[in-house]
Image 1 (cartoon, one colour):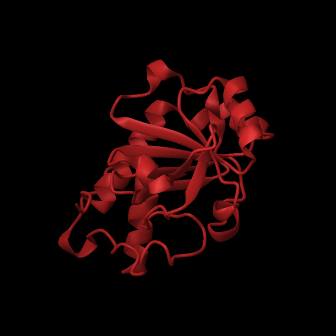
Image 2 (image 1 turned 135 degrees about the horizontal axis):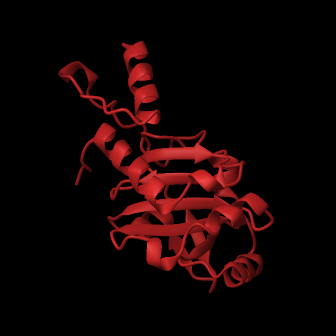
Image 3 (image 1 turned 180 degrees about the horizontal axis):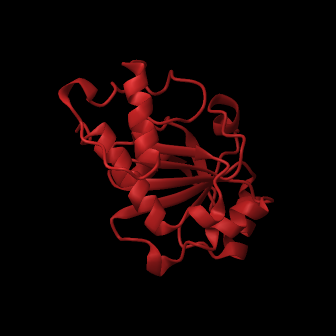
Length: 187
């Protein structure tokens, strides 16, 4: 049974369409409540409930930032040239209205604000000043990207993303495939 999932995952990654049979239904969502799961940010778990700070110093919970919409979360470092190169792919005109985006940086509010101003990002930047994603969720390679279904389930996660490969069109494709694999959101 495990080998079938590996074959399906390989075919999905290669861009092939895979028809599900009743025996190959989506794997169950993590048995542990989202706040008790630890380890790498990965597909099949919910984004954890973590407080971050806006560039204005306002506390926000990342789950509320998802707001029921498909979401791309960028985990970045302000000193990462690859991160900056990847962000150049994302302009306000190319971001579909049904897609929510935000970035989380492991920096102080001042650094985050300067980064956001310098890069003129078309989406908000939040700071993980308590280093929760770094310490608890092993987000230690930049850029790391997570694609979420509207209920916060991670359907795509990748560390060390190649900037030329992660464009708005590619993000939508990966989200669609992940949602096909995991099914509709539980509401």
